[in-house]
Amino acid sequence: MTTADVHVRGVGLWRPAPGAEAPPARLPARLRRRASLLINMVAEVAAQAAEQAGESLATLPIVVGSAFGELGTTMDILRDIEGDGVVSPTSFQASVHNSAVGYLSIAHGNRLASTSIAAGDYTVAMVLLEAMSLLALRGGRVLAIVADEALPRELGVEGEVGALAAAFVLEAPGTLAAPLAVLEDLRAAPAARLVESNQPCAPAIRLVEAIRAGFAGRVELGAPGASAWSVAVRPAYPPVAELVPHKPPMLLLDRVVSYSKDFVSCEVVIRPDSPFCAAAGVPAGVPAIVGLEYMAQTVATYAGLAGREKGEQVRIGFLLGSRDVRIDADVFAIGDRLTIEARRTWGENDLGSFQCRVLRGEGEVLLEGSLTVYQGPLPESVSR
Image (cartoon, rainbow, N blue to C red):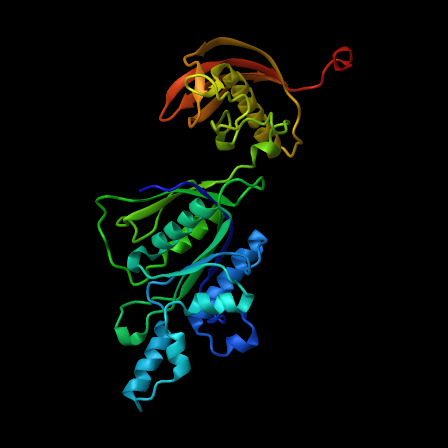
């Protein structure tokens, strides 16, 4: 299966370090006394991610995944049983799998939905799948967390398997503010080889590092080279509204898809409320001639991105002309997902030419042509 894209608004990561074997105190004193290492780890990364996202932990649905759960508490209970046979009620209460999300919710007065997940080596993937599904159904934001304590020595695990926790504030697309990154196309490989891991949540470290580094590509969510699940990560570009000197309803593009030195691509999905969309006609949709404006705004997006790299403000540009225009559709139908490409073929000072295309689906070209544009000062006689 695949999933729709979600925006990353904040991330958190904690691992023990010399002199910092436990996370900072994030819980109120009344809860801290009974909280396990796992609970404190979850509280720490949740706070990091929420702070970066500018979000209150009282207002986020929470998904927490842990492959092993409250291992430290469970081992304490087993030692008590082996000793005098008396188990502390407090320890038993804290041994259940939803202890971490329960403590986090109580600490922040969060009365929204919460989910606790244990899925072995698929834990990171299943947490993302749950969070992305919630966003697809309800929109808004979701806090996704994965955490595991170090495996106890009694299990006889070879090598050092340390504790780790990671958190992600995820959001459904739709807001104007640029996110940290975009996650999309969460999928399972049909013929993957499963390799059991002593640290199933470790892929979350790779995901956090990829987001922070502006990585573009797929991140495996299991053992390297043998993962059944992976997710695509790409750097987030500014909203089109920050790049093009237009305002709704004449801001026609939805988002930037990719950008490089001489190329940009944008996307627009045709909806019943899209500008110029006519309900009448077969099929209903936007007249294909509007694709010329899609191409012109894509060129403007390129200029906006190039200007941001130089620290420049968005400037007004002018479409001087078009040539070799070919239109192979009468209308862009409701539901069409269009990719608009603009490739810079030449340019001199403020004058330039772009070869543009409007594509549907997997590469069907519906409109193409060359646009000549100007982005510079006008003569005084014209500017009047």
